[in-house]
Length: 371
Image (cartoon, rainbow, N blue to C red):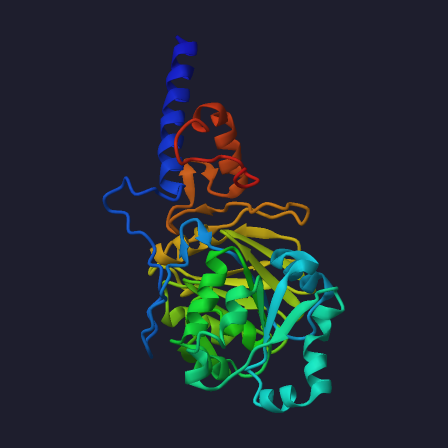
């Protein structure tokens, strides 16, 4: 009788865990109340639709290397080059963010300095690309270098200069097409901020919101983050745009995006900010991704869109794959009486039923992320 009672309890625990897993998993459309994430974030100042949907719950096409300003570490440049195809890469460097871009390109010595970091890594095919003319930005022959490129790097300056020159033009469409064919787009400082459609164009504690490129949909990117104490302005931006994920990137640090995998490389951290449930005391939840750590873009976007709390599992630096966190409503602090809702307890619970649950479609219980 005792053995039968134990079996009944075990069966009940299994049933609860199946339901919990299905609830925690990114749903695949079978739930009629499930709302898929939008591809495009509508900006309050101006609506521009990307010609090609860039992201879904699997992440983005191609790769992004988003640097928070300061000196770009050699390891970050080398990673960008690797994603672009190594020394056989065709790299286009865009200096348009600089107010002095025309003067820079007119001076051969300065123009050589612009391309020198890439040529020093053995890249033979690297060139500068710049205009402030809408006519040129829509000219097929002018944008041909981007159509042929395997990687585009956007330099620092004023992100508003980039937006003014290229938003709504064939250059913008060519950048999206580059990602679609598996290329990489990177940038530093202004070249980082421009990569989100809802763009922080300036401001101290009160962000000045404008429109940027939609390279990293569903997000807001801020740079020079810890170095210039920009936490308050990103927090305000996320509070005002509660469906988005905020990424605050320190100087000499890169957020690398491949598909749905997020990786941090460099000397600092990337602070992730998410909206919290309406019942929460604070409107924003935050955590840091450290150098060598990884996480999952689709999970973060899901948490931001649904407005639910995110309990992150700890990430060991040596892991090369993203670690999926666990989504839980903030008001639920226990999954069962006496069992605290944290990554360790959930992993222990899931381990008991790994063999059976791994066979269920759409559910992965691998604590180290998807295979």
